[in-house]
View 1 (tube, rainbow, N blue to C red):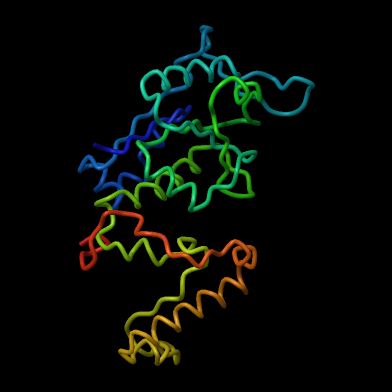
View 2 (view 1 turned 180 degrees about the vertical axis):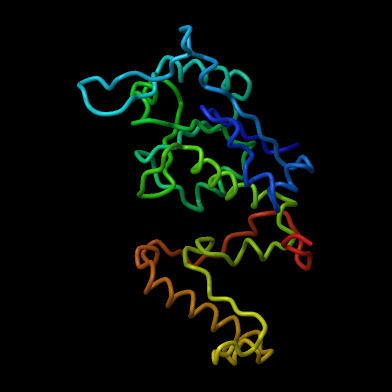
Length: 248
């Protein structure tokens, strides 16, 4: 059974975009997950297929209409009532790894992509829509955020990443930034790989990586330190250790 994603958008041609390549694209071709787009404009009632109007109270820009959005949402909910429905908007809760993990563990997700100045607030009162933001900045629309959210979810699906450890020891999985990585050549422009990583002592390497993760998080993202939990979570996918985690 695949993990199913539905995107409600004014620009369906933006999908799958980069999700059609690399691990996500391979998983899409293999049926591990599926992607459907719904053109919001198809649910407009007038001959101009209008989806927006001027903001009540005045101001710049246009606002997406609640009636048109609700019609498109009702269409999706009738087809996939069990999938959570999100709306990409800077007014939403911040997307984090906990939410990504929860979504990846479910049947899939439906995502409404906002445009213009935003969406009529009455939509969130009348329909079970969860507002989600990908960061404290403004994009031209919700589609790039939806792509980011889907990429984060798809990589955690069983069978997408080859090695379970590829998902276990990454930034945010334990509440910390990931430790730094190195590879050959041993020396590059006068900089050498830390000796401990070439020692073959797995206990020392693990301790060094743990300390660097804590130190880098303290210096770069002190906000994460307060939320750090020491308990290790189970692997985020059903992949097996020892397999390749990237394209071959």
